[in-house]
Image (cartoon, rainbow, N blue to C red; front, side, top):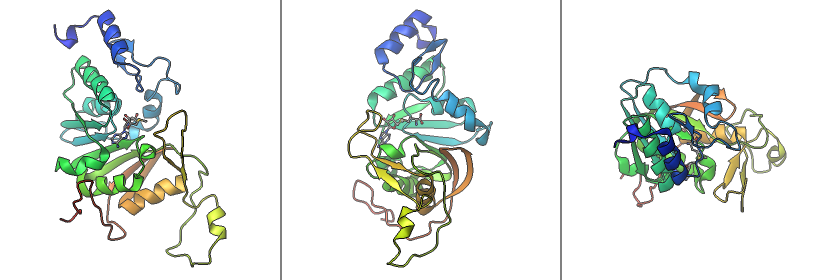
Length: 256
Ligand SMILES: C[S@@+](CC[C@H](N)C(=O)[O-])C[C@H]1O[C@@H](n2cnc3c(N)ncnc32)[C@H](O)[C@@H]1O
């Protein structure tokens, strides 16, 4: 029997066996996370920025970094993307993603891989999704640098949890050494380090404010071309402002 022939009761059993789920997907009428603490997540989030992405993605290659159970990979494939590759470090989430794609009869590749390893793909993508992952990383700027260097060919769709001020003040090219008051300003870039847990999750390490997330994106070489939702940015790969040296985890420098 193929996965597509599964009865609702069989899908329900498999969904329970693969749980708990972070993505609430609708698998032939079965919800994977009906009691999600954020509501019908990520559908409610996606609805707020879905119009910022082309309806027709045909011919495009998409990399979904931190794909989880594949909600966004599925949406990109439904828009006709030629190739969708979802990567995640968590094999249990990848199992969910593979099952969801099978139930929906969508041809999506999923692989266990960290954002720090994207250099090993040896391939660039028309669109890179980097949604809800930055604050789970101990080395967030390294991840953005590696995405820029190795996999982003054009568009980066980015989302981060944000805390602190939503003001982003204009930044000067330079500040002299004796500047102190600046660091108390709400609109100056700040990233909050979480030593222990946030929302019961020890993998939440850094939570930026709005000014910081925008500065990180620019610093990594991404031009912000859209801000369709409070936490979501549409970026285009642009010139890097400085000669950033990126060393990947295998110890190779970007230009080696
Ligand atoms: C909050 S979820 C976001 C899922 C999805 N991108 C979304 O926006 O709904 C974070 C995901 O990032 C994955 N993740 C954490 N660290 C990662 C890493 N170093 N490389 C790739 N994925 C990672 C987690 O396993 C999890 O699936």
